Image 1 (cartoon, helix red, strand yellow):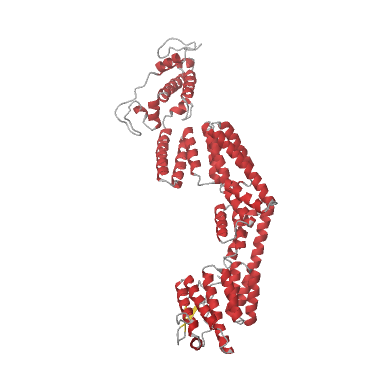
Image 2 (spheres, one colour):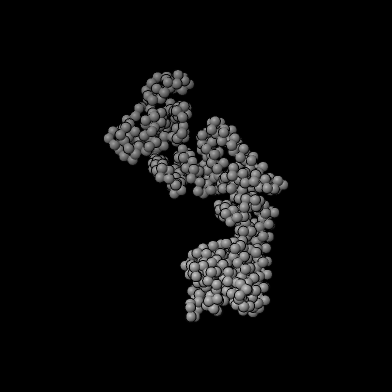
Length: 572
């Protein structure tokens, strides 16, 4: 780092310099220690604060600096400066005046170092100028100022100041190297700017766009090592982060820049912040920022285009939300689909927002029991945001409703992922319950599945269960297979029996609930049975032909079938 090149040196009374290794700090200047006692003896007593001389104030400042108390150091250096300045009077000889000014310059330089440590760079530069004013040959004041200017990103000012330092010490290798490094930084910044501009002009669609974006960010990171307070370089980094879809980082950096005083009137900053906000799904806040940009610059074309797009998006999503709340799910799906079509491309620049709209559309599909579509939308939402807990849970629910073994395994994995992302104990408890339910269903998936036998989903209504049962029972009734082979007859009888058993369970709310909870088939008649066990009691069931006859009678007639008994139904 540019401010970490020196060692801190203090001078003990009557002894040699004592060196303290301070690799991350500015050194304090002790270049003017000669004749301090002489100068102190000549001070007017009334100009001294309680008899304390400027040298002692300086020593107190040094002690605070070494302890990391930079504000305390500034206070003591300020007293040293004020005391020394009060000693400058007409009674001093020219030599004494020169010596005092040399000391005064070192105090300003030391205070500049302390100001730098608390990031008050402007105050530090002012102190360096004061140090140079009092001692025009003060080499360290020039180099210190040049490094602070480099930290702020004033590269031209830094180069000029390094040149002035080299006038005083032309062969100083360290300063020559520092100046060359600033020239390299300047070139890197130009290269990064060109790459960012290329990405901006092409909309990120030119060949090698991702490679260029990564290279630009790498250059900016190198630049910000010596120029850590360069706001313009940080702003360029925001755009580079947005280009790489690292929107959360970009947004956080815009917040830092505002705190550093870049201000809300910087239209480029506010625009980049708006783009980051939209990308992380905060469309209303993004619109507010874009309005602010246009308020400052009514002719800002880019901001106007983005604002128009986001307003339309927000309107479509809002219309979808209203339709969903009104239970008009078909309309809700249509509005959400329009919003997705209007999202800016490439999709990663609106990833979070797209994920939310996809989830809302998935919710509409779920209400209409379009579970394959639910799974598709949730999968796309998760691809855009792999920490979208709600999407994992919604997809898992639809997978369980479809209910195959593979679907149950996927649902369990989704719930386990959601559990890792859950933030509250209540949410974790709810997901853990769902995981247990999914595991029960997975276990049952390898056995007889009554929903699958009837050809209905797990969210089927009573009417749908009845309709499907009638269709299946008529199809597999043994009388329909009188002319079939023995093997076909056997299959028809077994299927007919399974269809009737499935209907007997799923048409009875209590049995259906126990079945859904994972109670074994043979224990469904036992209200005390628990999942995975065989409590006392057993499943007797109803003769499938009797159940079928009862059902057909309830439906208002036998449809050309008469008689009773095991194989007494006849189809006309």
